[in-house]
Amino acid sequence: LVDGNDVLALAHVTAEAGVQQASSGLELTQAAVQTARAQVGSARSRFEQARAQVETALAFAAEARAQILAAEAEAIRAEADVKRMQELARRDQISRQDLDQAIATASATRAQLEAARKKASAGEAQVAEARAAQQTATETLRQTESQVAEAQARIGEALGRLASAQAAPHQVAVSRAQADLASAEVEQAQAAV
Image (tube, rainbow, N blue to C red):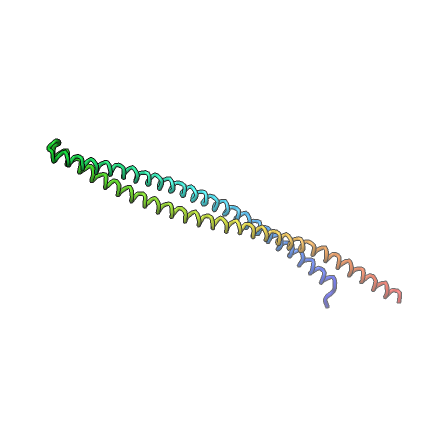
C-alpha cells in the first residue's frame, strides 16, 4: 500500500528534478543567444567588408571609364596626326620614317583604347559581383539578427518554465501540509469516537 507521504516525497523529488531540468534549459538557451549574437557580429563584419568591396569596385570602374575617355582622346589625336603626316609625306615634307612612327603610334593608341574598354567591362563585372556579395551579406545579417530575436524569446519561455518548476516544490510542501492537516483531523476524529 502506498502511503500519502511516499507520494508527496516522490512529488518533491520530481519537482526538484524539474527545477534542475528547467535551469539547464535556461543555460542552454542563454548560450544559444550568445552564439547567435556572435554570429550577428560576424555577419555584420562580412556585410561591412562587402560594402567596402562595392565601393572599391565602383572606384575601379570609374577609373576605368576615365581611362577610356583619355584613351579615346589620345586615339583621336593620333589618327589626326596620321592624316596630317600623310599629307606632309605626299608633299615630301617629312620622311617615311616619321609617317611610319605616326601610324604605329595611332595603332598603339587604338590598342590602348581597346584595353581600357576591356578594363572598364571587367570593372563593371566586379561591381556586379561585389553588389551580389553585399546582398548575400545583407540577407545573412538579417537572418542572424532574426535568430538572436528568436533565441531571446526562448529565454523568456525558459524563464517561465523555470519559475513554474521552482514553484512546484512549494506546491508539494503545501500539499504535504494539507495532507498532514487531514491526517491530524482523521486522528482527532478517531480519538473522539
